[in-house]
Amino acid sequence: MARSLHLRDGVSQHLRLNFVDGRWGPAESGQSRPDVNPADLSDVIGEFAESGGVDVDRAVDAAAAALPAWRALGPIKRAVPLAEAGRLLAARAEEFAAAITREQGKLLGEARGEVARARAVLDFTVGQARLLGGVTAPPRTSGRSPTPSAARSGWWG
Image (tube, rainbow, N blue to C red; front, side):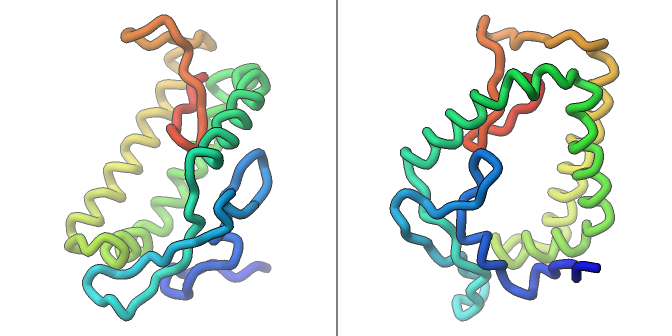
């Protein structure tokens, strides 16, 4: 059985990479940057890929290529990973709140509120899948269909 990652344990090596098109890989620049606790500058949370426009373009292209298969699943099946994310977020809410505090310097109460809000958004979005009845609702502001991507998270497709 794999050991659960505790956020104080540090960052796994793969988190220094980008996850694009189902694979971990370095940023085009090959560089990373440290993420430092603003309340304790000696506390380096981790090193993360220093991504740029080429990386965003690669992620958007991969998301666009995946869109037909994602759209074909229908809203009910697309809601499954969101429901699981909500379950995991609820199970580890205090751990996430502590990580937000450490990374952003927020008060723990504010961080707990962020976690609760994220859970509420996930719950709402999962519920919307059943209300759509399998129909993709276009956005009101344009005639374009939303495209999920690493640069902008949107899953209705």
